[in-house]
Image 1 (cartoon, rainbow, N blue to C red):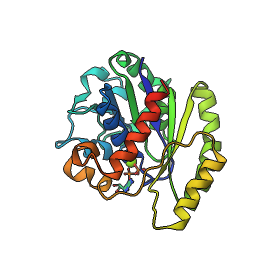
Image 2: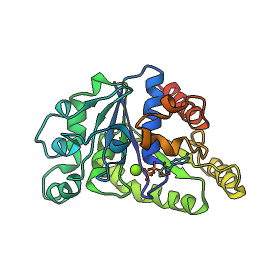
Image 3: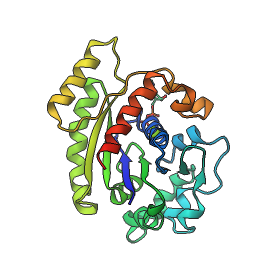
Length: 247
Ligand SMILES: Nc1ncnc2c1ncn2[C@@H]1O[C@H](COP(=O)(O)OP(=O)(O)O)[C@@H](O)[C@H]1O
Ligand SMILES: [Mg+2]
């Protein structure tokens, strides 16, 4: 049965989307069958992965207009349930519906036997999309930039998440905090990484700043296709190995 992992932080720009894309492609290097879900109306993960705009999206699934299996794009390294900008409007519609937090979970239940891993890229907020992701997941990864302000935000995030997790999905496992954008040239960056390891038990291997990672959206290819020997590829491979060994 698939492990379903949400990547969440209320802060933007911390590497949620880059991590979803790169952990997904790393798992596919290990021959795992992977589905990525873009739950962010901004659609960055979709933009990173597809040349053309998608015809169908996670919106059709949340609105219960289409079956999830008909909305999934089959790409080279992984499958993708894309996002479109219509998702922004969908929020209003969903807010007036019954049992709206469990729509994604019910849809994933119909296809999860097809996959080893489902990774969900969340928007940077506690919106209805994030609640759907939390309800549908078995595990949670919190990408956290190696910066002082991000560490403070992390404690607040963990506190704020307690109540929705208790109500929607008490079994949800915090798989780990993923330190991102570790910058060897800045002393504070390494210090934050050390502090994270001191204050939290499940800290995943860190992702270093790597210019190759910031280019994956331009070429529409994964870090492993772009340069499998880059630091970005090495770091995300390390994270994938921890995830694989957890099974
Ligand atoms: N390890 C990294 N090294 C260099 N740039 C990165 C790294 N991780 C993310 N980025 C860049 O930082 C920006 C924000 O990353 P993104 O994954 O979109 O964050 P989020 O989804 O949390 O908003 C993007 O321009 C991305 O290319
Ligand atoms: Mg993003």
